[in-house]
Image (cartoon, rainbow, N blue to C red; front, top):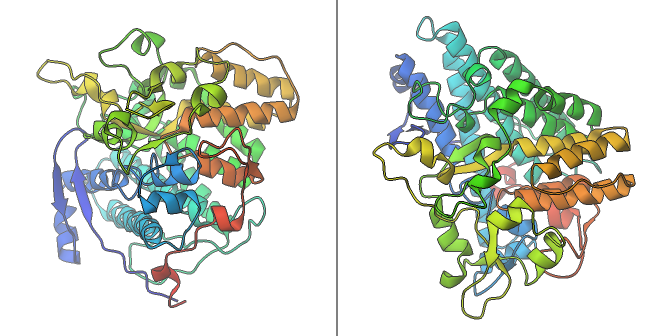
Length: 486
């Protein structure tokens, strides 16, 4: 069994401010960090900041590596990393390095969560009971979130082999060797942590009474609840995990805890089309009011200029194949808010088709404290309300109820209702919805891996052939450093 040696590095971060490195390398330094209430929040904010690293959700596991694996984009030029991803060449050195970096960063943050959880349990009087419970619940949820995505990425095609050996589950603050566990065992531990997190957060998380509080005017320790795994985000994540594991009844019940809650609906309302379609200055393309959990990237606009701007197209340029966006993905649905706000015709010389504008820069307000108004220009979504409608539609035992949820989701995107069709029709419509909704957020690869089968030729944004979901295409090998001495 290999000793998994994680670097313990806690980065401090305030939602819209500067960074501060704090490296608790030994027990004494940890005790200094956790000698005040502020130290606990410093550690927690550092963990959230770690999620925004390029190796994780700031790049690799949202709009770049994972979306290329999901066949969302054609890759051009001499970028061998992109080309290898497009052919599922996991043995290519840059690909294996990127996967290893995602793995190492995930488990580094998991260890940080465990250290903080232990400190919360040991502290006496520095935090109120409610503060301790909320922080504890958040860190359990972050731990579950990271393990789940490592399972979705490196684990088996779950529906075909749920008992296959997959990944370790680390719930200790100590550095130690960790065994690889069956995938269904990992799912059980993820759900255990999410259940405990939800119980700790219920009734105490400020998001329940006051909503996202996306403003600098709120108390520092409570604001920007969308940048934390808050109570509603934990329920949404639990529903996602249950659907992945095949428990449709449980997934539906959990999704409805949010969907049927008028308070949650009031806190996270659907995007207002006037902030998109009649607003050329600062359109809210990320649909920020609907985001239950996301990350902060102050430099988010550089994503567009580096990867999606056809006028600066280079080896990093990504776009779907010509005619895919209007001819297939949004065929007959050009009134869709997502089509109108997140896509535009390429204007670069010799480049046809559409470019993806989700992360394109928007104008900053001129006032002296712009962060509350500018929040949607720095937010990247990881969990959003819309997914719960899709989960409910997929999990309803009655086809009419399934279509009712789908049509509610379509209404939120400016689309007309569909007549009730067959279960196969519903499944096809939901796949289309996932592809329209989550491009740039990394969910397509995981969708195909969960469902198995194949990407149809009309779903493939890279080419015109179907792509089979197999162990070779959708189960990357564990990092060499993790398996070498087992």
